[in-house]
Length: 125
Image (cartoon, rainbow, N blue to C red; front, side, top):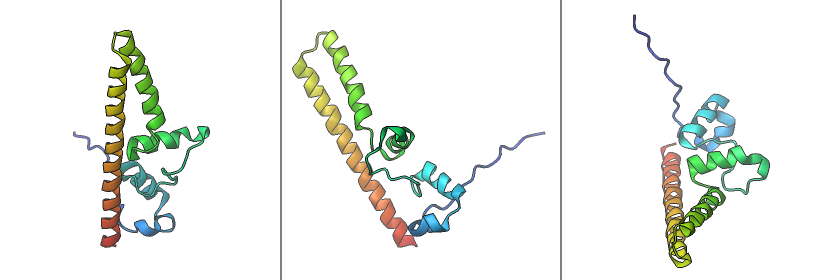
């Protein structure tokens, strides 16, 4: 006998997105938030307090928002490692500038992509 793995829920996250809080089930909202970053119960554009670390982590991983502090901490650790290996502070600063500009550019591109997807979803309704 063969066993078929159960199918995961899937939803059309564009349908009813304007009024998702009132119209969607909590199961659909959870799925759409996790899978497509739509219908999330928290706002990734706000400043997170220390007790909202899970929300910041989700926003960083899925929306690429709120990651700067974590990235900066990693970058400082990398800077110390490079200095220990004999790289000059000027070289390290140049590298850090390139990394930070790349992160900012990537974040801006992803923001614009999400903005375009949201516009298409509104037009489709």
